[in-house]
Length: 346
Image 1 (spheres, helix red, strand yellow):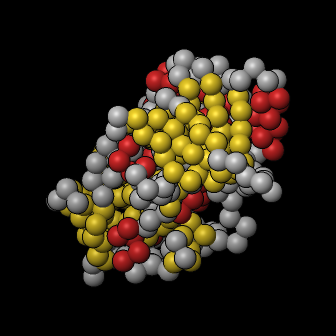
Image 2 (tube, helix red, strand yellow):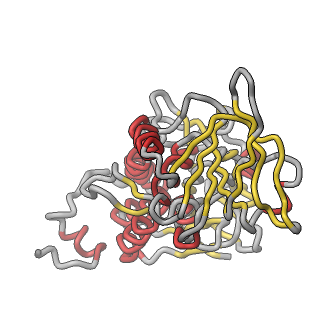
């Protein structure tokens, strides 16, 4: 049994920043994630994706952001339990929490912070008959290494930010990008759509796009070689689109998993929290990031960082109600310098 002040559920960017905010208040924690490494979606789905809305960073890669957050949290020596899912939470008579993971790790925790992102997210699959047989081969739902697609013909399905971002990111790496979307309207950022269409209009064949539906897959000697696409036109003529690699970005299907059984108030597939401390309906359990719901909530990493700061003070008040809370600045506070293990000089 591990005795800890706080268990953080979810090691994505918001969960990692929660370590830092708790550490500034002198609160130790352990962080648990079902994935085998820290980083959540940023590491698993968007490791190479550029992020432009992190303060002070004009652009930062997904994995780069995760690495920086882990470095920032390192002075507080958090405990990492990775590759295990929190499966059981039970509040004790003294207000503490018994927490158990799928790997058998047990915690006696003073409080909890749920930073589960979209929960146990699953990519929405291509449901065309036979497609599932090729998943993880040359049909994939995320990009691990973009150099894998060097000089290959790549077809991308989807019309959201992920589809357009990767179409643009892989352009110039892949020999040819073909984008297929099911409707005229794209859900991606208008600037990304405009850039994709601009590249397609060059007519050099390195970027093309189609609006239509997939009728069937095409196999050659048991391998996925293409798809038959039927365009949305008045007189549609099916077109065979061949490729080396297929990427499908139909979005993520959020799955709260065991969280839905922990007795906290939910709003569909999100957790309801207050706006003062990001506390859930269960005192002592807090939640931050994309998984939470409150009026005017925005699903941005930036907003999750703000919620982590608010939750840290909420956790402190729950654990130590006798402490008078006050904000101490990291630039001048000797206590902050001691906790950060710095001397305060530049």
